[in-house]
Amino acid sequence: MKAELLYEGKAKRVYQAEGKSGQLVLSYKNDATAFNGVKKDSFDGKGRLNNEISSLIFTALHEKGIETHFIERLNETEQMVVQTEIIPLEVVVRNVASGSITKRLGIEEKTHFDKPLIEFFYKNDELGDPLINDEHALYLTSATPAEIDEIKEKALEINKQLMDLFQSINITLVDFKLEFGRKACGTIVLSDEISPDTCRLWDAATGEKLDKDVFRQGTGDLIEVYKEILKRLEAKA
Image (cartoon, rainbow, N blue to C red; front, top):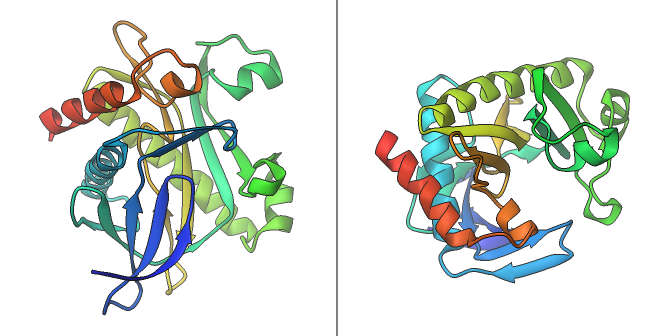
C-alpha cells in the first residue's frame, strides 16, 4: 500500500501511496518527544494508539461535516490520507490556560477563557516553532489574508465539535494543536493528526491529565493514559 518514503517527522513517517496519485500513507511511530525534541523516548504500542485515536476523531469530525485529509485507517499503525500542501503554521486553540501561555502571559493555570484563544506558531524546528501574529503568518507563509481568516474559522468550528465529543466522554479539552493543508484543488482542509500527542485532555471529574503532559512532566504512564482515551472513544463510537 505504501511506496517511497517522503518525509520522517518526530511522530510519523509519510509515504507515497502505491498506485494512488494524490494519496499518502501516514505511519505512526512509537517515539515520543517533548520540548521541541529535547526530551525523547519510545513506547511500545504508542503508534497504534495514536493511529486509532486519530482515526476515530477524524471520523467523528467527518460526521459533523468537517473536511479533513483522512480517508481510512489501513491497519494498526497506518492510515490513508489525501495529499496536501501543508501550510507551515501550528494553530493552537486554547479553552483553558495551561502550558506555555501561563509562563508567557502570567495567566494562572486552569483559568477558563471566556472564548477560545487562537495562537499561531511558525512551523520551523530550527527556530523552535516561535509564536507569531497574523502579519508574520502572511509574510512567512503562502497564506492569503482570506485564508488566514478561513483557518481561524475552521479552527473554532473544530474546537466546538471536539469540545462536544470529549465532553461526552467526561473529558475537558484544554487546548490542542492543528495543522492545515491545501488539496490539489486549493481547498484548505484539516491535516496532520488529532491525538493525545497534540491535545491537552483532563478528566472532567478528577482533573487527571490524559495526554502527553504525563511524559513531559514525568507524572504518569503514557501508554495507560492513551489506552484510557481510546477506550472512552471506542465506547462512544
